[in-house]
Length: 123
Image (cartoon, rainbow, N blue to C red; front, side):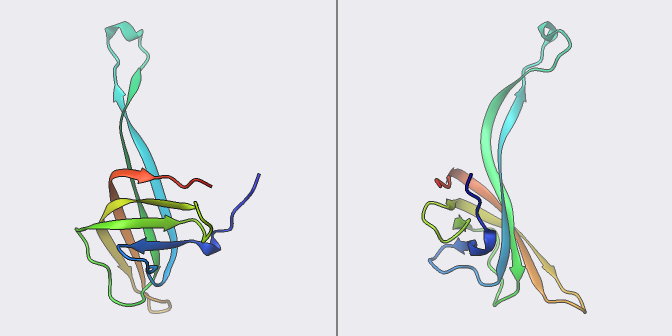
């Protein structure tokens, strides 16, 4: 099995330039589970798959003005600089957390909510 170092990862929003200062990102792909339990279920819960979705965060050191919130962006989450190791889709930037400490650097954490489908990393 081939392992991959995260040191080559980066995030792009709406252009071909990586968002400056970003150190990490997360992606959560989910499917809603719809409860179909009824009296015939013999006391055991039963489910079927519903709608799929995706969301996550990216964070790093402040490097320039913050990104705008509430608008749709083209989002590309790169696992590395190698071809095929990118997740792409449209998303809303819906939250910005600014962390400032007297003994540290200013950092930003963005949350996003995917809208529509996401293209999966292929390698």
